[in-house]
Length: 535
Image (cartoon, rainbow, N blue to C red):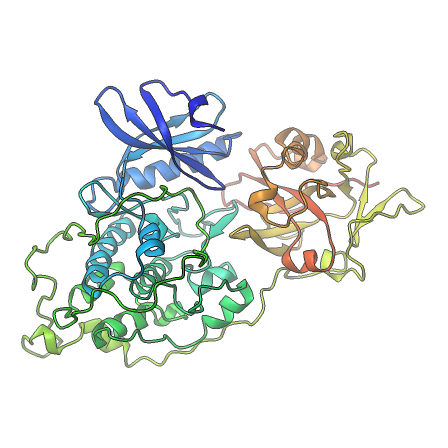
């Protein structure tokens, strides 16, 4: 969609800043106040109250923090006539640190530490407000018109509540910066943001994320999970105190990791960078290197000053030595900051770190005999049986009394045996799911299955969800018609999503996708099957 076709009262659209799988960011002018802004328009449509709640959560999370000097300000928000949500944000013409890293290579030690102090202060403020960012990375740290840095994109922001799942929707992650526990669908926590920020600082200093190959090559998810178990690789030419801070913030096991962003901020501020004279180090990524995938649209490349000068964090001054306050330990007097490490780091150093990371990604748990991966042959071909049922990779399906089959030309079918899931994780479009017993609490249930469209042969969820045939089959209309009598008794709103083939299924030749639904219950879970046909 070209920007000239977008109209929003009170704004003049000037051009496209960036575009991703989930959103487009436009440069616009807010006419009433004569201010240039960034207009972020989501590509997803708000089709239910649950969707609107989720959008309001993002706006609220970002809005609560708008006054912080290191958070991109939110000026306005709303929903377009076609039910796509939008946010009006502070324009950051300097682009992102991801842009700069790709173009200019690593930052100086002092610049990286200063940025770390400011962003850690922003993250600490978010955590105090009950908000987790969950997607901190160089591409989400923007440079504003004054050269300061600010954290953007609270699209994954979560406000955890005791006893309740943080989110039942697809959870998108950026593999290079996500904490190790996220790959195992652990409940998000502040320690995860600390890890992502430390990984971001590591990348700003070296030119690539922790454990990534020097040649800029990509890693599979399985390889990345294995590498998370490796010891923290010290950065060359960096003060020992900084390596120690990053090492404890990048500990694979969150139980032994710095879990408080405020502690990370103070530890970074205490690092002595005066004796480091390099402007940068490490190899600059080759021009053809692939930058780790970003989840949402980020501003396109713009001219950035050679030295990023972030605003000084609250409580500090702009004097060169202000970032190194004296550090005291229990039972000791004041000590010179240049000869001492942060207090908590010394305590954490005495803790033995125990890490155990699985070598492979487990895509299905609690597998039963009808699980797609237990089939001896997993193909998209169908073979009608005597009772009219057809198997899709070992899953029993039927077209009898099946609303999905009524959608012309898509080959949609309904399952004769219920199929439920407890969670979906989207890592750059690669899906990981946990199979659940439908008779116990679960989140999602399959309501339709069909062959991949001939012009949509992909197992990437972010690409597949854009296909009109997929959208048509996995629509609210088909889902509501597919409910069983038990499903119609549920008065809650329903949400839909898609499941493409997993990486293993794709390798085995499976070329089908699933439409899944979740009810918006109090805890996001439900018990018992609500879809399916008896054939």
